[in-house]
Image (cartoon, rainbow, N blue to C red; front, side):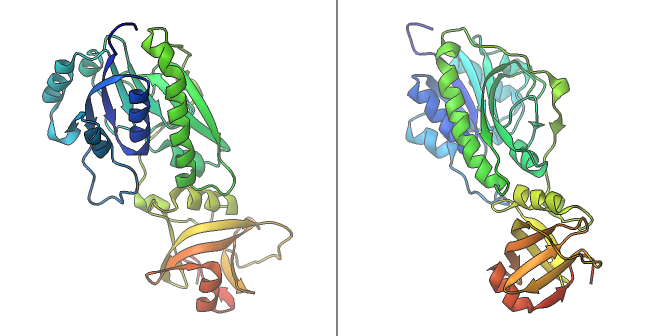
Length: 315
């Protein structure tokens, strides 16, 4: 586009919302309105505020929870935007709002589409033991994460990375993806690549109770669950000797292990807590929250004492 700066309405939340809003401004986009969410008092707020970032730059801000669809549509229409952008916004936008942007509506999603469409894609990727994820900029449609792909940036998922650590990488990847794509996008010649939904799946949101450890699983599957829900998420829960515990970080134990016919079982020796799993592999407890206190493995070992300890429903 030439002449006046392109106008945009931005729907955004979370760290990705902040960084991508700043990227638009750095590329000269005239952001006239930001639509964000009110923070949920029941949720741990560990991320940056889109509302504060927009207000500091003199951009009008509204909360999605304060407006019905008709009122929100009227606010967006009044701006007469060229573009709409969605960055980690938690609601789908109806077709009536998408149609208000003649130059297009684009969403930034936290996976390498078409994989992991839907909610909390980073947590799902870690849970499934993926070694790579990333950020995808794509056209918005009324179907979630289904529009043509404009740009993608991959990031690695290392074997012990938590979802929070991967999220930090994806925030950077999102900023890079948008930065690279914007010149062509604003000139009206975006790259469009197919988003073959048959090669990916849709995933829903996760609940705190989904973090319960099933000790009939393999050591790797349990390790991936722990990583996927580690703080600031609710954590992987179990019991140790009948006491409720949250396993916040584990490390897979490599090398030859003695066979334990009573697995799953927790063995404490030499200042380490080793959970022997039913597949013959084992996990070292690195950080555990128990008895209202966060303990590293050596502290937990001293508290429990050497010997055998029950896990989950096993005494």
